[in-house]
Image 1 (spheres, rainbow, N blue to C red):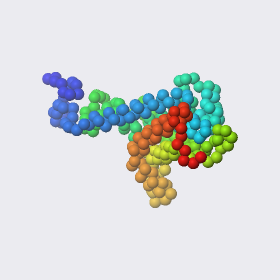
Image 2: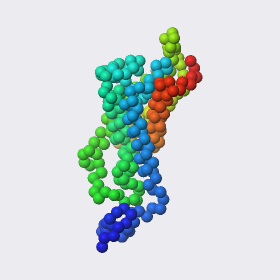
Image 3: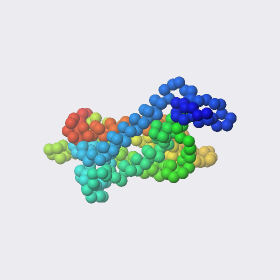
Image 4: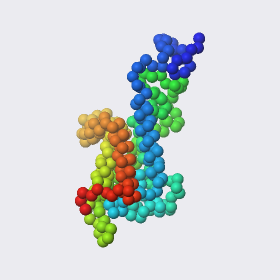
Length: 278
Ligand code: FES
């Protein structure tokens, strides 16, 4: 007999399983977390894509603020002052970001992140939609095949992201300067923008260092901690950070958007930076 239930066509239970015809017996709003995840991730992707390709309002010359979506700015399309590492390419066509050397790696770093995988496997692929809610799929091969087997390359993106975090730190330190527009003299300066850049960089370090691959390479793959006291200490600290990895993943989505948005407002002249010193 074929009947239907709330997930579509009725599938008879596997041998030995009780014949429960509902997709799930959960009565809570189990669909809320995957929905929130899908909206949060989609917002970030749309914002980051638009802003990375925007091509203006990413650098405040007077206070040396550079948006993280434009670091490093290595194309001839960049404002020369914003090119902290020089200009390696000619003019960028509209469909390529100025920070072409970093953004693809950062995208792959987050795309292969163990936390984000959980998040988008649930939110976009319903695999599973929630615990104890039947999947819409009839087959499942996990991460055993191409392309998902490539998720195993995460550690290499971690290494690159580590270097990019150093670069973001350098950009942030430059934000502690103020250039007098009349005399051209540069001296120490501190504004709200500097603090926002600082908070963003702290967040990026917390996210990067709390990575599961970081935990593995520092000490997680060792067998005898007693023979590696330094790596054991490192592993202990990173394990503590790692328990908050989900939090840091969302926190940095927020700080990245906030930092870029603030730099955009100041660079476009919409608001002026709130200065604390100079
Ligand atoms: S596991 Fe999330 S960044 Fe490595």
